[in-house]
Image (tube, rainbow, N blue to C red; front, side, top):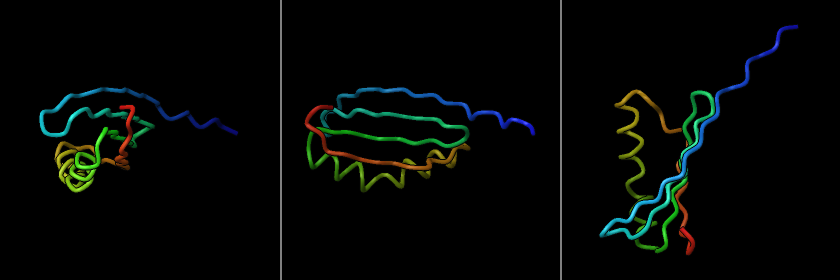
Length: 79
């Protein structure tokens, strides 16, 4: 019986301050070849804007040769 290699794991957390969106925190996880991103913002307008433009991010990543496997946008008072 051979052992399967464990998938590579990587995680990064970044915080941005945008003029029109306010503070946005991005948690990016790489598990094997899968990319998972969670965005948190401190207001409803920014959360709505990020959700509505998620497809643009996914398309840009696909064009660069990487697929975005999941994108979660949350409104959170503590970004």
